[in-house]
Length: 353
Image (tube, rainbow, N blue to C red; front, side, top):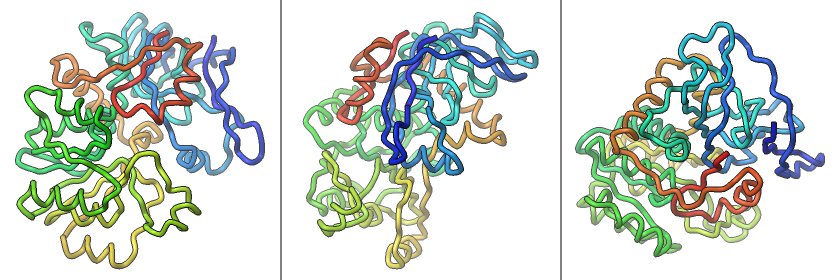
């Protein structure tokens, strides 16, 4: 079968994406073979990959996790699905097979049946970002009706799903934008889902806007899309913190939190100094690290994870969650799309096999 793999080509860790022919491994007891129909494209930080494979990084790694497809073969102990079922799931980061390929292998506990009225492209586009949003808003922040939630970069695919889910659960949503296209997309939802705020390089703009919208009390939850740790230009350059798009400084996030607020961060190596911790302490606030792949890297939470996947599919089926698919690509085009994925600020690119 054809699939895309990450290939390490030198000891310095250079990474190249390659389209290769690979053999499918034999199925274990609780595994299912899935013919990929669609795969949502997302970036995975190389730093995170190296943390996951801290003992030994394989020569090649899988590419693509958010899969919708058809079960073509099942292991001897599989009971939850059968051959011919249309299923949706998120492959673990240590998967031996790629979602960007013709076939992949799942553990049966990592997939659920796809509703018949939902297309493979739509399911693949939403499932990974919805797991991320669900984990952040429910399992970390415990968001409920009446809360005020600040979601950074709400026009991006993960941000958009988080905005929709928070609104669905009755929260007041504030969301940031950095470009005109992002603002237009966020304002295109009817009825409106969020109060949109500009995020620029001016550090005081975000905090003042949030305080104006909340009457000076701050928000109950912040879900970031990465933050800046430094203000000194030399430190920023040395540690590679420069970004094409604005990111708030960690002090801005802390300043936006209200009493007992929860900061949910996707920054893998966030550093808090004693004054930062004191700010959290005085607000009775907390910090949570968002790493959704943890669901599929361990075996202890199958029941909760299955609940998340089933609830996501139900919400898609009922039209509560939707995603803007900006481009559908083929397997031959996917490598080019992956290399330019960082510039996609609105919507999702989906591989259709």
